[in-house]
Amino acid sequence: MTDERWRTIRLSLVALFGVGYVAWFFTRGIIINHVLVLSSMALFFAVASVGRPWRCWVESLRDYLLFAAMWLAYAESRGLADGLDFPIQVESVRNIDRAFFFGADGVVELQQRFLAPPGTVRWYDVVGSMVYYSHFIVPPVTIALLWFFNREQWVRYMRRFATLLFVGCAMFVVVPTAPPWMAGDPAFGYDALPPLRRPTGNGWRYLGLDAAVDAWDTGRDWANPVAAMPSLHSGFSLFFVVFMFRWVTDWRWRSLMLLYPATMAVSLMYFGEHYFADAVAAWLIVGLSFWVWNRLEARWARRDESLEPEVAATVDVELDTGGELGLVGTQERHD
Image (cartoon, rainbow, N blue to C red):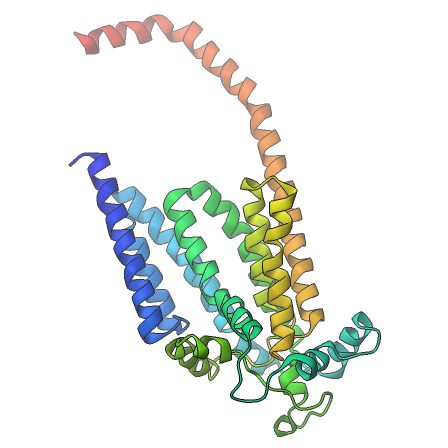
């Protein structure tokens, strides 16, 4: 079978996988369970490798194991945090946030001014929910599509993404932080803020996506409740936008794209999930990740360019010394 035919088959299988992913989303909810995430990604790597040589299958396995290691490291950060027992930050982060808003609690102000009574949904609740839950869709879909269509860009993406995730998980362990909803919940023994609501799913339930919300509510049972600093929701949204800047050069479109992480940060505050300080910390890590890898990759590119003349000179020497033998050998093979 020709390579072009195999490529058509792979595209068809990937499209079929996408249909199944969307169908699962609407009927069963967002895929956030450990086993389901790893299983679904393993299935994608498999169908996207159909018809490739065995060496490509080995490469696919290696790439999948990298993704699995990243996901498991993030998932296991809760166990490490519990085992090391670092003190939970409650008032310190709240005070940093107050500095941003000149003494006011931005989270409290947003809920008091805009949060509708229970049972009522406003348009910005829908927008906020859509942006909030995109955190569980955009990163894995981007990783999968980049890997399938352009592995070179996938490598660039994963270097930066892994750095963001590693620093974030390290901070979850060393600086466990109570999110705003917990800081105002007497059930946890905190009163740093007034009691807050967590209406993250109101907008999606209004759209009839109850299954997606239920899947997330179930996932809270294993999620790390004090993994608030930095906010990976904010970090991933800015990360995606900045990575896509490579193909979007017009500053007007770039400015429009930045509305995504900005809306994410505001939504997280409005839902009582994060402080603005959590978002700022994540954005700084994103900037650090891109700065480090941009410099490293530029250095590697300069090194490769400097080696090219040496390689060319070596080839010329080999041709000068063995060119006659090479021509004879070529003639014999043609005969």
